[in-house]
Image 1 (cartoon, rainbow, N blue to C red):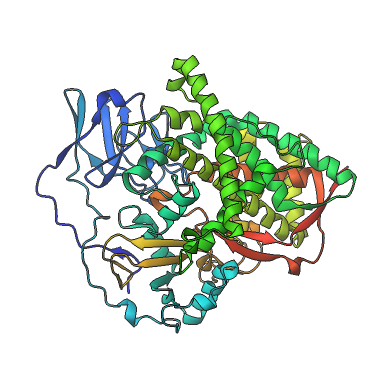
Image 2 (cartoon, rainbow, N blue to C red):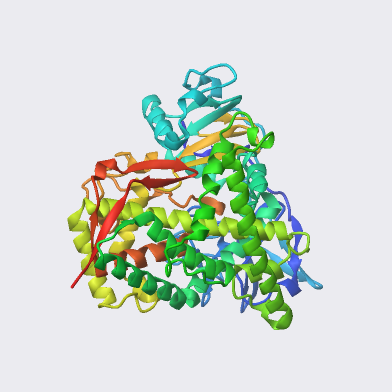
Length: 593
């Protein structure tokens, strides 16, 4: 049995395969430029020797290299900072080398020869040694499938238990849909690397997102996804974050001021909601160029509106009947009102941004935030994005920026309450780096918070906010030795390999030091089994921002306060609602001398 995705072997190219890549007028600066042609992802660089084109996917985990950055003459992958020579494609510090493609200008156009590449993502009909019918499955009811056994609030825990019971891949049914559940990290990695050509999000997701009004880069597919992804990556790039950092630090300072006031009166805090204040304020400034300052007041209007969306997505995605399309329940009407009010607010910000761009046309060349980028950008057909697409992406960015980082930080606090040695080490590091300041002085200081980063990684290993990922096969394909037909649903159980002792020693314990010393647990340490942000071309675009926010907040919290959980830790439970959040977690803060 193999642990890779196995497409039909691609014939050896017999001659050049020249295609038009782009117009020269579209290439401003040195790059990198993320481009695609004939099903290939390419990265294009402007070097002193002329244009260079390479296979556009990083050999590490398949990330799009066009989303990286140039550091001098080196191409840097944004995911794990692998560096490649812009002149040769060779990895700096490793044996890997990017496959080069000849390029040549033809008039005002640039053409590329892709005959050196293989189309790993173009999958044709293949025959695996195992069919879905051969796999173990949960007994189910006619028409209903296993829906009676699937409590949505505990969906991830139920599927992880079934994976444990079966010991490998298995199938279950949601209504008439048979779902293949995979928890082997090699299978998961192979599937994620083959997106978006071979696998997509389940086809039911996009219309559900569109109905709610949050159809954006998360739910988009194909050429539509590529155009929107490029803008999201620019807004959340490492270089953009460096320029934005002072604003991020100011938001954190006012959060510390809020917490100092709460500590003086001994208030009990819902720490997840407190963390959301920081992530909402940060995200709205980055995305909208607008400061809502939820930290400065106790009425958290935006959070109350956004909190309706993820539960609705989860309910509708796994519903057998689309009852909301026939009649609206009170819960549906509350969702409709919340989204409508958010759209009114966003409409005003959109009109203000358009007015700024009209008054200063030069601003279009250097948009100050994601909203301005969406207004000035063009889709794959060269047309402006519609208001619906803009609204969908703004809401998507707000949702993703609010919940995921905030929940990870809350889970970190939960585990640190039971790990005083780890909390003390985190505090010592914060004292050394912050030196009594409310925030690290610059982005380089944030990078020195290595133990805070280890706490974040260990938290995401044990409590990933996205423990499940539902995808659908675009083509017949083999994963491992399982033949998967077109249209088949796959549920990736992304947490299970990270808590398996095959991949991590002492897997059930919170041990941040494992991320600084691989031998710390005396057992296995396989980072490739840890995929909290996904993998491949559609890895989370907010990864860099999220890790920066996590390290900053953890250092500030444990540098300035003693943290005590209010209540029994055993009462804190996981709740799945498109993302996985802590329920019942409350803390008290005491200011340190």
